[in-house]
Amino acid sequence: MPNTKEQSNEGLFPCKILSVAFGGARCKCEKPLLLTCAHAKHRIGGIIGGVVQRQTLLRTMTERELSSAADQIRGPRDILNLKRRASSESSLPVSPWTDTSATPLKKRNPRGSSNNRRYMWLRKWKLSSASDPNQVALLLQKNILEDCSNSSRICSLPPGVSVELWLYEHLRRMLREMNELVVSLRGLCDAETCPQMKATDEWQYLCAAHASPKECCAVDYIIHTLDGATALLTSTAIFESRYNISQEAAKNFQPIARRLYRVFSHTFYHHREAFNEFEKKHFLCRRFVTLASMFDLMSQKLFLIPSSAIFGESNITR
Image (cartoon, rainbow, N blue to C red; front, side, top):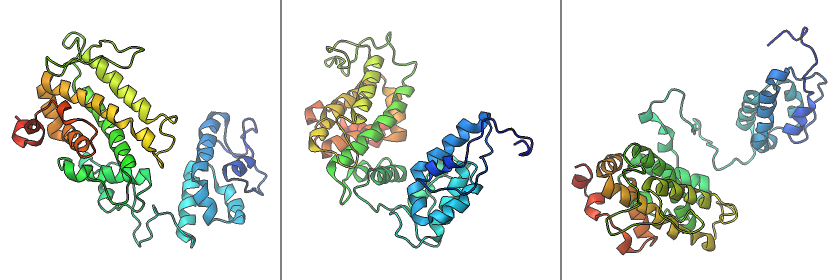
């Protein structure tokens, strides 16, 4: 950063920007923030981004402390440091996410973590709010990381968690993982090798992503299905809030499940080697079938893949 004595006032932002970021706390300092035009957008964007975190900070710091601290703030890192310092000195009630033990639980991966050491902190984490979708999603992630092959444990409804929220978080998670399955089909499934979306020769599916259902090649059908399910689950018109999923909105889970299962069935019958390799690592189809069976998301006659190929280890790895 250039010397402050040589820096012009062009492009500088006054300290009252901080008043906006901290919800009305006034700064007594009349000096401008030393931000040039080149850095203004990034730095001010980071400071205003701190508004998301300001509620915790304002609960633990008085207006006088905020005013005196405003001079020290030059970016989002300073906001984070103030929040940490204020939280450690606070005697006010804390969030269920806050660890009050002598050694707080760090809910993030250390820099440079290898793949097999990622999310190690989840081993010590426990669910404290069964109605919080973020915590429910973390619990699901924890169960999968501990043993992704144990589909019964992963899909069993935890105490206090609503069925609607549990199914919603499962489907959200499965959609993300199914994108990896699609990537594994690159070079194997295209318009030439699979011009029609089929499971067995007896079952052909029409794509519902168009104004009227029509025939698509398999890879287009799969992509349209994943995109449509994602758009549906993230639609605020249908799912107004993850914190309160209505039974009316939950009726969409069954058609989503039926269409997603077709992706597995096509992969199994037409790209068996890719299916076995992916399933051996992720056990995603096993988890999907277990979830659909537990919560009646699909009729049993629609399960086209033999159970022995999903739940029998010798069949999966052959």
